[in-house]
Every structure is written in structure tokens, then in C-alpha cells.
Image (cartoon, rainbow over all chains, first blue to last red; front, side, top):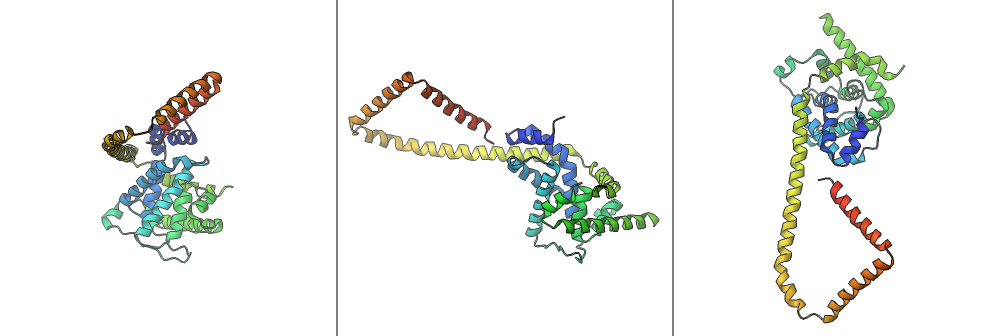
Length: 174
Length: 115
């Protein structure tokens, strides 16, 4: 099986089939990440789509390393652009309030416990858990993607994971 | 122990959730947008080129009319330059090689340029 850097090199030379293979390989991770960041499937898929379109235009700048981290960084920036357009500021402070998602009860009704527990986290923790736990980026990669200090990432992940476990355990008991 | 190992179980749960996303329609949608953008770019470039060509063609009669009055030395110079190039190429085939490399480079750029 061809590696991601090989496919990216072919895509940079204009191969649409190589890029399509990259999209197929990474779409689940990117869509999952975008959906978790936005809180809705449709907004998430729009961001995921924009992510791959940007990746196609910038594929020549991919300089090796983990392709997943590269594409997730683009996804996070697309998410930030959308948020800026919506004039919603992300609170980086650990004491941040929970920013509720705008979605109907019908939409949330069939969500898995995991997604609901994630949605209850403060935004900064949700972003860090989404990047590091759900999208499997290393703490360093997440720090590079967000521009936040490494220690802040670690702290948010630790707190977020603890809150997730607590929430999931409470759900199972109930 | 790596940081990720402490929450590998949660990562597996998220990954299972992600695997439920159907890949095919999404990939088709993304690639469709990419191809549509490429078509639009080609259309714009073609239309611009065609417009430029039409504009140039419309000026051709005026250019030809003016050229009648040009000094005959221009024709002489062009002919002289052609002779010089031929003489240079036959005297030193390196020039032919350089010319070929330039042509190949242009062809390569044209062929590999992102549509």
C-alpha cells in the first residue's frame, strides 16, 4: 500500500486519483473532528469539505511528517475561520464557560453518550480532547495546530479526559 | 508510557464513531468540487485567451498596413539573424542542445502545471 507522503507527492504533481485516495483515507478522522468542533454534522461536513479543498490547493506545501496532523491543522484553521465569520470568540481560559451548541433536541436525541459528554466540556477542553484523543494527534502536534502552549494542551486534555470519564461513568450508572 | 496510552480506550471509542461515516459520497463530493474548480479555471483562461486573440486579430490589418512602410532593413536584419543562428548551431551543436533543453523545460512546465 502506498504511503501518505507518496500519495501527497503525486497529488502535488496534479494526480487527482492520488488525492482522492488521501481523502478516502482521512475523511473519517477529519469529518469526526469537524463535527465535534462544530457540534453539528452538516456544519462539520462543510468544514471537512473546505479542509480538503484547501489541502488540494496547498498540497505542494506538505513537507513530510504525519499527514493526519497536517490535514487536522488545516481543519482546525477552517473551523476558526468559520467561527470568526460567525463572530463567536473561543475562550482559551480554563475557566471558560460552556458554549452550548445550537442544535435541536431531535438532533441530540440519537447522539451517543460519548458525543454528549464531549459537548458538555468547556470549549478549550473540547478542542484539545478532539485533537488529541479523538483525532489522535500528539500533544505537540496539537500545540502546533492551535498555537497554544504545550502545557496548556496537556492540562486541557487531562481535565477533559477526566471529565469525559466521569460523565460516561455517571451515564452508565444511571 | 506515552500520553496517548492513558486514553487509548476513549480514542478507540471515537474511532469507532468515525468509522460510521460513509466515505464514498463524501469523497465524490470533494473530488467533484475540485474538478468543477479546474473546469472553471480552464474556462476562464480559455475565455481570456480567446478575448486576447480576438483583440489582437482585430489589430492585425492595421499592423500589416503599417508594416508596408517599414524600412527594408528590418527584413534584412531578420534574415541576417536567421543566418547567424544557423551558422552558430552548425559551428557549435551545444546551442542546439540548449535550445532543446529550453523547449523541454517549457513542455514539462506546461504538462505538470496544476489545472
